[in-house]
Length: 146
Length: 144
Image (cartoon, rainbow over all chains, first blue to last red; front, side, top):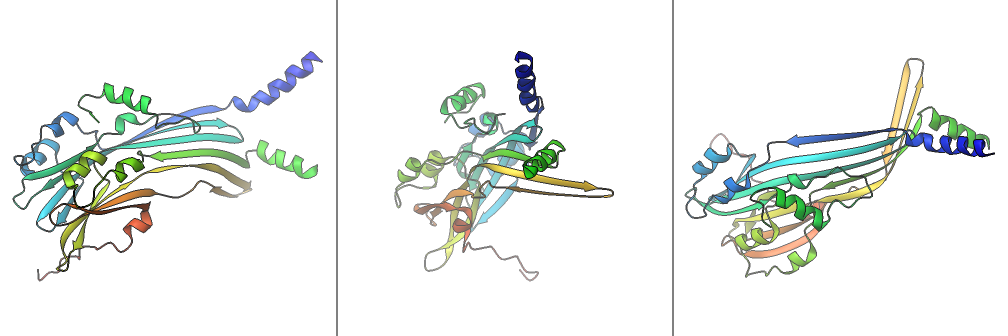
C-alpha cells in the first residue's frame, strides 16, 4: 500500500522535473547617471552632450527647440517548463534621458528615468514592483537618486 | 471517459501545452503624482522632476496661430494570463496554433505644454486614445 502511494506521488511529481530557463536581452548600453548629472541647464550645449553620450536614439524638432532621447533597455525572462504547463515572466525596464535644447542649442531642461538595474528574474506570481526591491537596487547603482 | 483519455494522451505527447505568462514593461505612474500636477502653474522642469523622463516627446500645435507646443507620453504594461499551444505533426506536415488570454492594454499618460512650456493639461488612458489626433510633422519637400 505504502509502495503504491509512493509510486503515485512520484508520478504526480514527474511533471515538476521539467526545466528552467532564463534569458536576458539588452538594448544599448546602460546610461551613466553621473555623466547626465554633470549637464547644466543654461550652460551645456548640444555639442557637449553628444561628445559625452554619443549619438542620440532620436531627435525631435519642437519648433525652434529640439529634444534628444537617449535610452537603454534590459529585459529579463524566466521560464519554468512543467511538460504540459509552463510558467513564464518577463520584466523589461528602461533607462531614459530626454534633453531639451533652446533655439541656440543650449540645454534648457532634462529629465531622467533609471530602470535597467531594477529588472528582475521572477515567476509570474511575484511582484516585481516592490518598493523595497527598488530601493535595494537603486542603492547599488551610483548616481541614481529618486 | 474516452475524451479524458484522449486529452491526456495529447498532453503527454506534447500536442497540447498550457502556460501562465506575465509581462511587465517599466513602472506605472501613480495617480497621486499626476493629481499633484497644477495646470497653468507647473512647467516642463517641474513635471520632469515629478514623473521622470517620458517615453516619447511629440510636437503639437497650440493656440490660435498653431504655434509649436509639445506633448510628453509615458506608457507602461503589466499584463498576465493563461495561454495554450496546440501542435500537430503527421508525416511531412506539421502545424501549430497558440493563443493567450493576457490583456493587450498599454496604459499611459500624456502631458501637454504650450509655447511658454507651462503645463496646459494632462490625461490618463490607453495608448491608442492618447495618440489619437496627434499632429505629425509633414515630410520636407525637395523645394524646402
